[in-house]
Amino acid sequence: MTLPSPAVARAITAPVHADLLVSGAELVATMDADRREIRGGWVAVTDGLVSAIGGPGDPPPPAARVLPAGGGLVTPGLVNTHHHIYQNLTRAFAPALDGTLFTWLSTLYPLWSRLDEEAVHVSAHVGLTELALGGCTTSTDHLYVHPRGGGDLISAEIAAAAELGMRFHPTRGSMSLSVKDGGLPPDSVVQDDDEILAESQRLVDRHHDPSWGAMTRVALAPCSPFSVRPELMRATAELAERLDVRLHTHLAEDPEEDDYCLAVFGRRPIDQFAEVGWGGDRAWVAHCICPNPEEIARLGTWGTGVAHCPSSNMILGGGLAPVAELRAAGVPVGLGCDGSSSADSASLWLEARTAMLLGRLRHGAASTSARDALEIATRGGAGCLGRVGEIGELSVGAVGDLVVWPLDGVAFAGALSDPIDAWLRCGPVAARHTVVAGRPVVEDGRPTHPDLPAMLDRHRVLATGIQQAFDKAGLDPSAARR
Ligand SMILES: Nc1nc2[nH]c(O)nc2c(=O)[nH]1
Image (cartoon, rainbow, N blue to C red; front, side):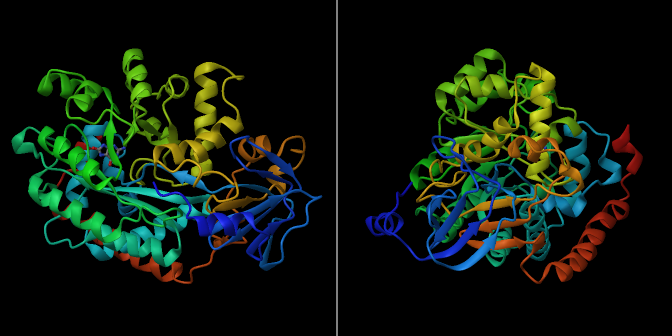
């Protein structure tokens, strides 16, 4: 990772004229190295980076624009470490709702085989807008379905993120092992290893920005042990090392995956992960519901990150991820919405709250606080994406990504004693303002980009076309429910 240049470092320590000043907060929860919480605080952003932070006694710099926090809570922007945004085209899809992971995937793969550039662009516009409304400023996406003739899907979603001004970490997903070779996906959605590797390199060359404050970073992401060949896992790890980009995959997400790995590889998923050269801090993995204590310790030693996806894990019935144990072992744990066909909603506020509730259910009321959940949603995400100190905190020199959350109205009546507890225990809450690199993408609860209504109209047409494919293919909708 590139650190700020001397010029940037000078600019952020000198008194500045800010581009944006967010002031009038009830509390600024900086989530910086000291976890400073500043009552009545303000935050200034210059050239996309935080240039100053202060309290009521500190005079703020003059600013081109002042965004009133209106007595709200200011936090760093939340970081989404796992998503399949295109799945909002098959959200809450009735024929797939009751399946376990493998049945659910097998029902939906044929629909996703109809993705093309327009569908990905429109679904990304809608999906990233939804994320911004829920307080997300940096999102990953794991797009692993690349149908023949579908076009350059990753570039299409990067275009959507750039239009909206969202910080984006697309991961070039891949599947290479179809049913006929012992994998789960059908032939229509797999590619061969050479094509996947060539495309991965091309996308990194074209879009990946390693510089401090980058808006776009690309990672490489073979889908799961049951949809790619071990040779591709190994070659992808080598390519990521050579290009110095991060690695992402699904891991240990379901007992069915344990059974598959034992039957096919003769070892458990995390042993197979190590066998193909992935055990290290370049990788972060999604779900990680089923590691045993010895595997948790190994993940901690490696520094491999985990994207905790609480809603999706419960909806698919995969189980309860051992979040407290992973964190105690030193694993960077971030938060993920997961795809909108399994989690169906995409709000990191909701995922943070759900992570807090699940933690308390597993380990008792004193185990998991709103601050723990905020930590996972911010600094934990930065750890997964290799951007500690840069995203997920408000400190001078970090990116100017922040959220102003309301603390007023019916939901908060009487919640006066602690703004962070109020934020996550009351609600439901959507962002009042979401700011990325000093520019509001949500203001007064509304997206600032004007195209959302047109995008939603187009999304409905595209989603209808894709879902009708299910009927046309003559699939028996009730089969997936059995
Ligand atoms: N929740 C999800 N798990 C997955 N595993 C896999 O291989 N694909 C998926 C997915 O889309 N969602």
